Amino acid sequence: MSWFLGWSLIIIALAVLIGVVIGWLLAWWRMPRTKSSAAAQSAAVVAADSAREDVEAATVAVLAERDAELATVRATLEQRTNDLTIRTQELEACRAGFSAHLVAPNAIMADVVARTANGPRRVEEPVEAEEPVVAEEPVVAELSTDDNLQRIEGIGPKMEKALQAAGIRTFATLAGTGEAEIRDAIHNGGLRFAPSLTTWPRQARLLADGDDAGHEALRRTLMAGRDNPKA
Image (cartoon, rainbow, N blue to C red; front, side, top):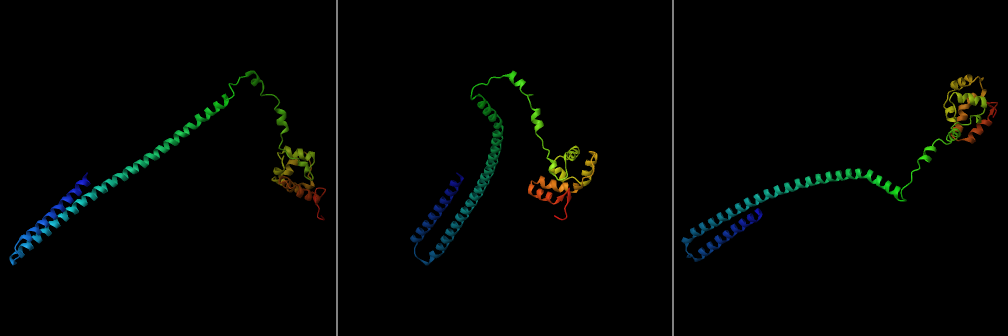
């Protein structure tokens, strides 16, 4: 509405200016063409220029006022756009939280639907109460992670038991055990020193890595549990 009023003022001012100019032209045309009319013509020209300048000044003022109003409107729109963006982000966060809260109920509902799809199940409490302790110990007894240490050149059944008593039950453990600890394990088992003891960690490493061919080649270079320098 303010924009319409501003342009209306500009149009009215231009109409007044045009009327003044036309009136001046008519007056000048009716005046006698004498030298005495020169001063009047000059005065009319000055008046017309003054009226034109007034109209231009009024027009500039109105345009400046409209620019200020447009700047205010633009700032308001930007502020409302930012507020709308923030509200949108908040709504997205709320919707994500609401969806997260719905996951558990949906999972429960899906489980209920799956359970009731084939009709209600009958509860047989006496059968379930007697089932748990039926023959689990033999299965545990059969599961063993110990390696066959007798595959190593120089280790027999007694040596194996002495090492197992010291906690050395796998090839990987024997490969990472120092020579002094191996000697202590043998002595604690009541056995004497084994000549091939220094080669046990190396043999165990090959077996732990699954290199059976390399272990077999190493065994061929051993004689009575010692490195064969002639091989």
